[in-house]
Length: 312
Length: 247
Image (tube, rainbow over all chains, first blue to last red; front, side, top):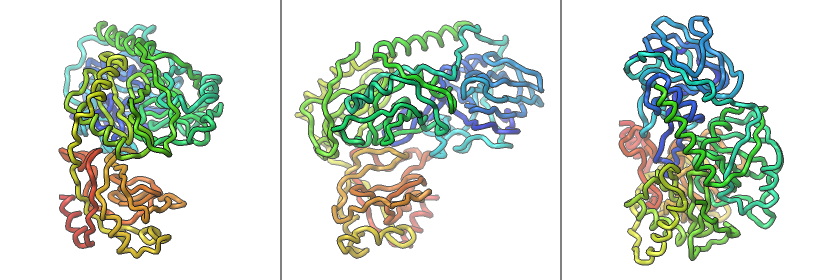
């Protein structure tokens, strides 16, 4: 059923779910939300299961004309939001009705916000996912970010019997100087001085930062003298830190599949959201941790989601 | 537990089949298992043999196994498994591999209309060897090309086996948009563009087949390990197949 109309699309707004899995071997990137914690919480706040399709909003929010009674929740980057010109809060559910005008403004901290709605956004499922693979023009709403006058449908579902919110201390912060934890490899043996350089100082996020990857500026990361400058092409992972010939690291994100440059380290899965919540001009400081610690952090985040679900 | 990682100097120019696979961490949910160095049929045969076994019985907690030129990337759920559990399983399969015979590859025929408006760069190919256009076509469609890996864009095949006489450098200025279905050559590689994308390959022809159709029940025509055979067709045949594909 038709749920809202886009009056203004905002900076870059697309339909995403947790991603398109199982086709990486065919060159189809996972796509999906970049901040999975904020995404899951948004869905839980409106009474959905965790993986319903949402809108991922980048830097500047959209304006929507509501045409259906439902609950909405906005999580992720702090953006400010009004319903019929009255300010409303993020990280809690809000009942909207036909005729309402919802306006998400600009980022105050972070980069990407997630708007979940009762029942989830309803678009055609492509290869098991609702996610938009932007550069491949596949999935989501007609394979593209939203435009003015697009009419979006949602699945029918029960609205909440009681409003939902989460305690303040469970809401993440998105500082402009992020500490990003990594595991070295897969090609850490291509580097010696480069490893020291990578972890030494902050890197600045450049303007070339999107769902494909974040190009950073800072210390050069040289490849060992006797090593080739490239590798036989192989798959990358979201979070792979690739070193191209200019020796400036690129954090690859969710719209990449194969690369031919050595990858010095990989951002741990729980910190991918922190990378994606930085904007050009922000800084990233890499830290090195071991696999066990990274897995403990994954489990911790899963526990946090379970705790949030138990609130309701 | 964190597995001890093997270290080895890797020089992709040469090709080597390792006695024992090398294990590399690709973050907290990827394990890269390398069987050799460089681009080599023997190394890739081992990749395919291992992939085939794991296809039949995927270890618990493994979400996807991606075959590459010389390695397998295991993507796993850290809530269920980890490299300390996976590595012994993979080693066991590797140790028993001697007894396994490779099933011959499936050959997938791809019709191609060579030259003309579909292959604007065909004159650049084979120039140094003084090859005529018809000889270029003949040499290009003679082999069965092994698909080492699929990636870059959905369904983009990394093929091995191009005739040395056809080796041609990339275009100096890449095209902003290479049309879907274009068949091209870049250095020692040949391949085709399943979706329109920027690219610097020398274009020699185009296939009317939908190489990647996300809404088709099987979106792809082939996978890594299959062979591709290009079959020359006329422009009339191109139009006929093209109409059918639009169906």
